[in-house]
Length: 411
Image (cartoon, rainbow, N blue to C red):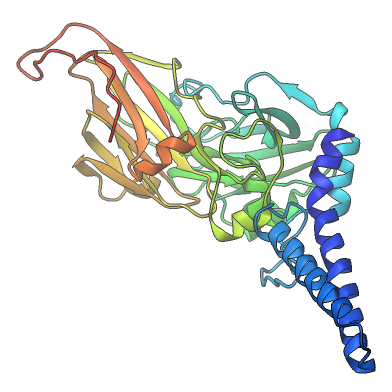
């Protein structure tokens, strides 16, 4: 109940501001019309009027609007609804708060990549997805209501072969408060499958598609407002391998960048709920890899001499990612996740659009810590970084120097 009251403070302040402002304004106008002699009353009413207006607009601007967009704002998306959450959904959320599963670690392990496909023929591949709404930490002491595929962010990495028939089974968990579906960018067909896969809480559906073009593709929930579902964590990657397969590598990693728009300021502890206005303005509080801050710390390891392939996606709804590994050069880049076209070589940083993907490969020559970043480096402070730890023999012909271990602060 305390969390609900804290949440409702925005709505209550806005309502109080409007009542005070219009009440005082009416009184002030009435007093002028009657031309009464109580000059002090007019002054008091005018001050109260300004106070009410100020209270309303301060609550709109300083305190994020978590229910819908501000009162006089109109949006024009195809869903014909605001990208905020309906008030009744917010009430339902807090009413069912104790029923949500608490996930200890929302982050998808970047090593959870299915093995390359070895068969030389087409098959029917069954894919099972469960949409699930949970509570988990986005940063230490900071909790968020995630909407997920299979209880993690991103959803599971899916791997099929060019020409396969993919049969998708999607279930919406009984505890969910919202309908969900799935849109595969690898699908040729209306909505990428979203038009035939909408599931209400407790419902299950099935559809199929033929994987026509090889490539690395995003999939995501596409229930209107689509951006709201994606900024709660509903995205993942599907790889359609070419018939001849991909070049052999020693290690494959799965990394997806995402944006989260919370009511509280960056670092504010406690349960943070979605801020629709911040999403519209493109101002995420948290930008992370694999669902939370620190998701790629102490989770990625490799050895000198190994060749690494990173399957990288951008599940965000506003930002372009400038993916970069500090201390490495990408030997091969499959630009925008395409397979069969030009492969770029010797690339320092590669652009990945919102709703896009890429594959990068590099060979490890020197041991050490290699940081994964978006080279829009201000995003580091919003949680967007990870570390690949590489062990093995030094190679002073390639890199030689004394590591500076002193703590360095300043500007």
